[in-house]
Length: 237
Image (cartoon, rainbow, N blue to C red; front, side):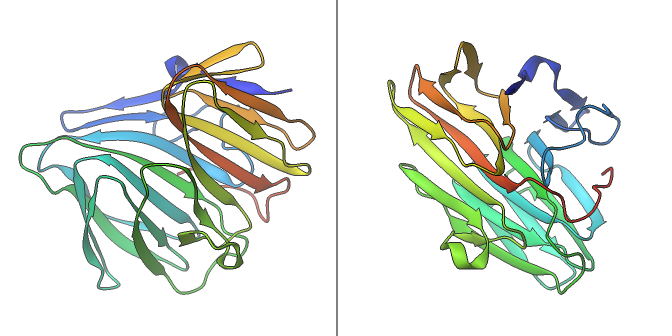
């Protein structure tokens, strides 16, 4: 059975500088029924005020993908990577055996709005790596996937992540037998069967089912296709 993750019941962290919505358990939001799906462990929708951000902190055994929707972020890590990630760019940091990094809003005037995604790799450990790409603003884009997939960014798992840009009356088929799928709407409105989805909503589709997104407006969505079994148990971030 497909499951709707309504945006209204996401976790929410709000401080003086951060406004963050959590599709899955994260930080102080701990819901045992929302510990991830497949190897998708974190899906956060973050807004950071000008000049603020995340001080240096450590990750390991996780592929961390950041897609900037508005503004820009400054990334710096202990592997020597320093970069600006602008709107419509994506960054992938594979933490491997461990990396320490910081992320700050690089603007003194504009709020930075971005989606951050954490995916479990097939195998823990390994050397950290970093990549950054510009993302087309139209079409059906294979944003991330294994090295053999031809994706813009290379994950350390067999998961694929598509960025789908749709027009009103388009249909997006979500049928991949034997694989979990998760959809996160970035913009617009669509229907899955009789359920209405709008920006911020999610759709969980188990491996033995399929459905179609019927777009009621122009919009965009992230579509994850993942193996049905996890390589090892997820941890709580």
